[in-house]
Amino acid sequence: MGLEVIVGLVTIFLGIVGLGVALIKLTGKLEDKVDGVRDGLQSDITNLGVELRGDLTGLRGQVEGVRDGLQGDIKGLRDELRGDIKGLRDELRGDIKGLRDELRGDIAGVRVELGGRIDVVAAELTKTRMAVARLEGHVLGVPRPDTAVEAATDAA
Image 1 (spheres, rainbow, N blue to C red):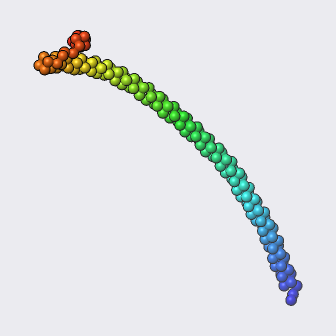
Image 2 (cartoon, rainbow, N blue to C red):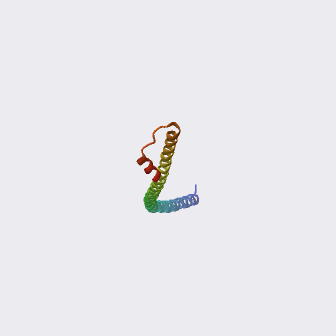
């Protein structure tokens, strides 16, 4: 082999070594870039996770606030409803008492009226008895009843 062939082979070898070195450098740069992109993505993912956790915490707070507000509204409505029911119950009790008092008054009036009518009927019955006793006395010869009782009965 001649010198020229050896020089050619060395030149080719040096070219291959140079390409190998260039490839190693490019591979290192690519690895650095891939590592940088990977680190950037990991950082972005981490930051996104932190941000999402913060948003979730905020949403939880809002949901709890809405829940607490609704519970307060429900309690207020429940208290208002109890008050309305108590008011209606008191109003009904008052109405019932008024009706009871009115009915008692009406019953008392009816009692007085019936008592008067009963007294009239009793007086009429007594007059009828007296008239029957007079008639019996006249027809059958039975003595007449006491005239004092008869006068009191006639006056009624």
